[in-house]
Amino acid sequence: MSYLLRLVVPDRPGALGAVATALGAAGIDIVSLDVLERGNGIAVDDVVVDLPGDRLPDSLITVVQAVEGVQVESLRPFAGPLDTHRELDLLDALARGNHAPTGLLTEELPRVFHSGWAVILEGSAQPAPLPASAVLAASDAAPAFTGLTLPWLPLTGPRLLPSDGSWLPERWQEMALEMMAVPYGSTGALVLGRSGGPAFRRSELLRLAHLTGIAATVAQLPPA
Image 1 (cartoon, rainbow, N blue to C red):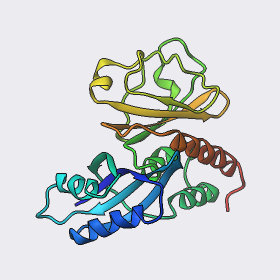
Image 2: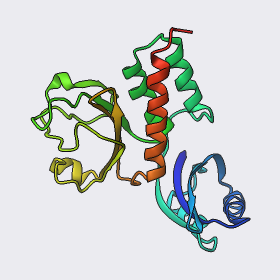
Image 3: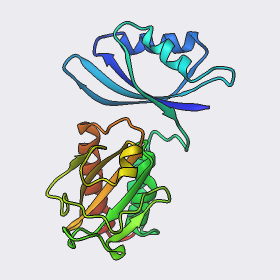
Image 4: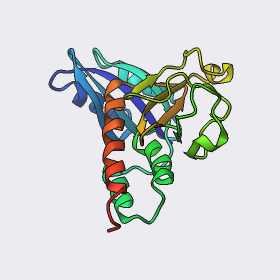
């Protein structure tokens, strides 16, 4: 079974290699690696690994944290296809014009960012409760935003939406629902979320804003 490890690794030569060596010695294969952040002497990496069927997930934490200075920020099961060109494939699909941009973004962005769901909202109705018509597109796993009052709409810029926000329904807080949102269109927002963490980092937020901006431009081009 595949798992996604978020690691905080000392930003020094050989640190990530030591992690790879420890995992390999334990019979655990690294399938993909994304570097999320570097700075202040540390690097934050998302690592997808294949765990042998006779091993418990907790063994991943034991193996990795045996490497000096390495910490596991989160561990969760990973499902879905792996593709090192996920973002390019998304932009290519938008350029071809065979799918509605909103539907394509909500379907593909969760895979790009290893998250659970995405939703696109029209924010002009705020601060009143959000009507059903304001949900422009949503992935299958997205929670229901209809009827919520979202004080952060309309967005003026990219924003992290932590799981302890006062506007969140109690059930969402219990699920430790982490979210980030970026402007979409003139008054709307694209929201990406996942349950149980890890919290989105600023580097992920800026990457989402950049990709969404490019996607909006590409979607306006004549079909390829």
